[in-house]
Amino acid sequence: MSRRYIAFEGIEGTGKSTVAARLAAHLEGHGCDVLFVREPGGSATGERIRRVLLDPEGTVAPWSEALLFAAARAQLAHEVVGPALAVDRWVVTDRSVYSSLAYQGAGRGLGVEQVRAVNAPGLGEVWPELVILLQLDAATGLARQEDADRIGAEGVLFQTAVGNAFAALAAAEPDRFVTVDAAQDIESVWRDVLASVEGRWPISSAG
Ligand code: TYD
Image (tube, rainbow, N blue to C red):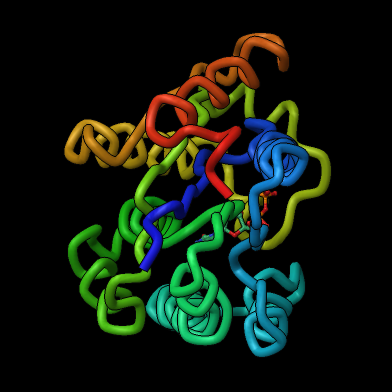
């Protein structure tokens, strides 16, 4: 199984979706076989769960939220990401299990390890190898945010807790995480992202 599974993480407004899409396009432009997904979603079942999770009118209890994210992710791992890694494709994802650890584990206060424990069985070995954390302070991120979904509409204290949790996860897993300063201009962010990927895997001849 290929290990080239790259996740972009961060609080709201870091520009992570744009950079993730740019990386996927860049890899494709260099002849790499790339799967680009987003969480929650990325599979038919996952997209249905996404609608339940992010509906601004909806009510979802904290553990229900954590389990729905875990369910969408288990489906994605089983149906889409696992099979792609099995045939050596690159996988680039906009968010991953680490969002659940930070948002549900810390933001909702469910406990990072408890949330890890409910996600792990559905993922097995399908776990991001490189996590690129775009770091930004919560107030700046919220000011940049365009449309808030149900979770994105939580306030600055929630976002701060999530951001602190991401930083703690990066410190605890230094071989997996690269932290990029998302307050920089977009070309500098992109340069750092590319360097972090190239530092791990050669891109041009990667296939
Ligand atoms: P996303 O679609 O990435 O939106 P954005 O790019 O605007 O942040 O994520 C939707 C929301 O879901 C976002 O507020 C983060 C949240 N989220 C969790 O709370 N837990 C998770 O496990 C994931 C994947 C996302």
